[in-house]
Each structure stands twice: as structure tokens, then as C-alpha cells.
Length: 394
Image (tube, rainbow, N blue to C red; front, side, top):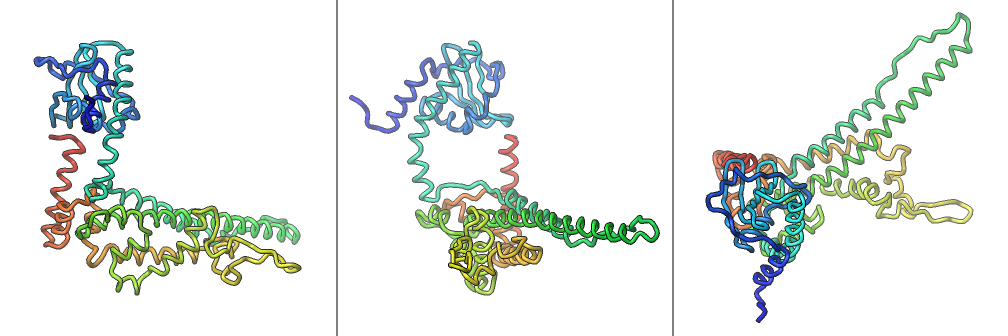
């Protein structure tokens, strides 16, 4: 009789793909005596799936933390000992026997069998995420660095555009008024070209800065949702992730702070700058579309509101626009790093990877609502555990 148990079905399918694999491993064999090498990291991008398949599904023996090793599983392939290990420098396969063809055959069979494992785990993963039993990698430093990289580049470019040109002494023959005028015109044209080029460079960097900031904002709001220490209801994590940035912001920052803050200005930046350049140059209010008025010409469909369009000026984002945008970003950063968000920001800035389950949310709440020593103790403990796992110093 065919089993209807999903796990038994998985085991049967995996076993069918792992022909030649058995859980036999010589009891007196030392893993250090087995030659090993690392496969292409793209073959096994998530080594933990191999651990689950060979240990949990196939019942292979395993060992936990070791020197620079997170885990090992032991068995055999075609009668000779094999092991799979997750080491500090990546996933490794050990084989004591066989040749290159055998090793490639082993890799191919593992990859095929893992497809069944992923199919089995997919609904489990979806269910756990819906319950908040999930974590998200903290990329705050990366997003923040990208934003500040483009901001600095834009600042330098606009400063270059405003720099006064050097005065050069014209080398002309005495009484040659024509050469003097020619030299003056040449310098003036060169200066205009320099200013135009620098302003365009500033515009390119400034638009990249705006896009980078909105990405940074969305990422940090998701992290702050955990670090604020407020429990999540069932299904709330996915709902929060799918919400718009301004909806997220309203849940993180108090209404009183936002009403007097930059929320409305941020929406203007989004509509005027970010959306047009992120979506092919099309503006939501019709500023990128022109209708043809007979005997008059092409008229923007947003009429006089075209004066607010980034396309109203020869340089879409001029230095003054850039400075205004930076000031708004700075005022929002102030809201997200001070007052009740100062300590949640510390957790985020420290690189803590947030988990959204009840126990971890409770721990974050204790860290941000307790004493200063509570926060420092949490960060010190987290940092120690992170370095231990990152370096596999067990």
C-alpha cells in the first residue's frame, strides 16, 4: 500500500534519486583522513538543505560544531566513505575512493534529489513566514553606504559647477584686439561647457541618490518594525512587507512627529523625482504626456503643474533642488534615529539580523525599553554569537 504521509513520499522520491548512497560509514574512520574539496558554490548555494536531506530524510549520521566546521554528515557512495561538511570557507564534499566521474555523478544526484526537498519545504516556509517565524538579513550598512556614495558624488559635482573659473592671462601681441576677444570667447565657452558637464553629472548622481534613499528607507523600516519590540499578529509580517513605504513609515513614526515632519515632502520627491526616473520617465500627473492643441502646439496634460516637473528645467535636478532633497532626507533620518527610535536604530546599525517571532521580539523590547546597560549587554552578547558563528569558532 502506497503511503500518503508527505514525509514518507519525500523519502521515497529522494531515495530513488540517490542510487548508490547508503548511510554506512566506517566507525573507525577519521574524517580528517578523507580527501575533500569544495564544489562550485552555485551547485549548493544553501548547504543546509544537504544537511536536512541526508540527516533528517535519509537518516545519515552527523556531528555538530567542530573546529571551523558547523556540521558534518557521514555515509557512503558506491561502497566508499563520503562526508558532507559546512566549513568556514564553504560547503565541502569528502570522498575516499572513486574518480572525477564518480564525484560528478554524486553531485548531479544530490542536486536532483534536492529539488524534491525544496518542493516539500516550500509550503512549510510559506506557513512559517505567515506566522512571523522568520528572519531578514540586515543590509542597512550596504543600503546606507550606497545612498551616501551617490550623495557625496552629487555634492562634489554641483560644487564643481559653481566653482569660479581661473583667470588666465591672454597671450596676445600688443595691439592685437582681435586675438584678445578670441581668447576671451574661448575661455567663456570652455567655462560654460565645464559648468554644464558638472551640472549634468550632479543630476545623474542626485537621481541615483534619491532612488538609493528610498530603497534604504524601505529596508530600514522593515528592520525597525522588529526592533521596536511590538509583537506581530499572524500574517502581519507579509502584510507589512507588501505595504507602501509611507504606510510602513506611519507604523514606525508617531503621527504627531510625521504631521510636522517631512512625510508630505517625501511624497513630493517620490512623485516628482523618484517615480519618473525609476519608471521610464513617466509622471503620474500626466506631465510626460502632451496633447496637440490645433494652431498652438504641444501642451502638457498636467497644464501649469508642468512647472513642478523635473523636465521643466534644462537640468532636471539643479543644485538647489538637490540641496532641498538632502535637507528633507536629513530631517527624516533625524526622526528615525532619535527619541523612541534611538535604541531600535542602535540595533539596526549594529547589524543585528531581526527575527520576527514572539521570543525575539520580546528580547528586542527588553533591550530597547530597559536600561542603557540592558541594551549594551544585548549588543555585546549578539556580537559575540555572531562572530562565533561567522568564524565557526566553536
